[in-house]
Structure formats: structure tokens, C-alpha cells
Image (cartoon, rainbow, N blue to C red; front, side, top):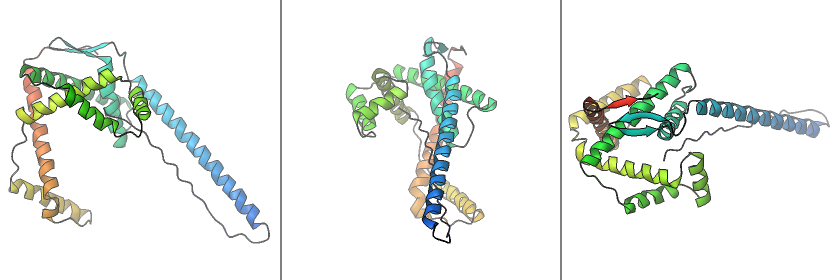
Length: 255
């Protein structure tokens, strides 16, 4: 389950001025009151902006029961669309983009559909190859998710806020596990050579020099570079696999 959280941190600036005369304490008290009033006004404005943003983002969602697309006769519903859309909108906000602009709305829609179609095709392929997920696997991952919350009540509140119930969550967990099994067996990242690692490190060094930053030694960052390159290769193979599956698939986009 992907959560999208909007955190607004309001900083209180307190300006202390050295006042002359016997009314110093009174003056400072008034300044504190003004600072608190300014803080409250700022918080209210941020709250208002957040609520307006939420309304605009929600307006992009569609009816949960509406058919978004048919992929080899597999129906993708509005509830699936809204879940992925919310995640993409959250990523846009984290990157400093405005997800409510005309261009961003169209971009988010296309990315959401592409993601859902690709995931459906991969899951269908995983089913053909008889990849299975046990209830034990699902519960193990579910427990890991629950541990991110302090109490069961907090977890249930987050689940409700996401628009899902336990059945939907377990279904998503099962799909994620099945896809991971498929990726590991069918789309391995492959080996990363020392030459590839060195080339990537040299690029980091050049970027660091341009930015005036000190770059760690190769041996200190080699594992991270290797992992990054493996993920990149696997992602490229995954895109190629989806494109191949699309060639023989019957895809009907309804929105």
C-alpha cells in the first residue's frame, strides 16, 4: 500500500528586540502575541491550500465501478485507477510539480493507464507460468505494513483514508508478491561489470566536481552503484517485456 502524506511544517520566527524603558516586558509580550497570531494565520492559510489541493486532486478521480480498460478481457476498474493515480499525484508533489496543471493532469492520466495495463499484462503472464502466492506470504507482508503504524487503530484509519478495505489490500499484496516472483525468475537484472561501475562512478565524480562537492571513494559507494545499475537494467528489460506482451494483447481503453 502506498501512502501519500502531505506534511506542512510551520516555523515560528520570534524576533527579540532590545527595548528601552520600564515597559520592556509589556512590549515583548505584545510582540509574542503578534508572532503567535501570524503563526496561526499562516497555519490556516496552509490548511486552506491543502484542502483546495485535495479537492482538485480528488476531482481527477473517476467512478470506482467504471470500467477504465479491458486487457485481454480483464476488467480494470475505477477503484484501481484512483489508487494508482493518487500515487502518481503524490510523486509529482514530491518532485515539486503541480499535479493540477493541464499538462500534469494529462500526464498523470496517461501514466496511470500505462501502469495499470502493464501490471495487468505481467500478472496475466505470471498466472500462465503458474506463479502462486500463499496466505502465509500475504500475512507476513501485511504484518510488516502494520508495524509501520503505532496502533491497529492508526493502521485502520490509514487504510480507510486510502479508500481500501482489507480485502483490497490483501489482493494488492498478493499481486505485488506474484510480480516480484515473476521478475526474479523471468526478468533477472544480470551481472554488472566492474567497467560499468567505474564508468558510472566517473560520471558521479564529474558531477561532484561541477557542483563543488566532495565525492566518496569508489569502494565506499560501489555496492550502491551496483544496485542502482541492476535496478536500471531490470527496469529496461521490464519495459521491453511489457511492449512485447502488448503486441499480442487485446487492449481497449475506455476513458
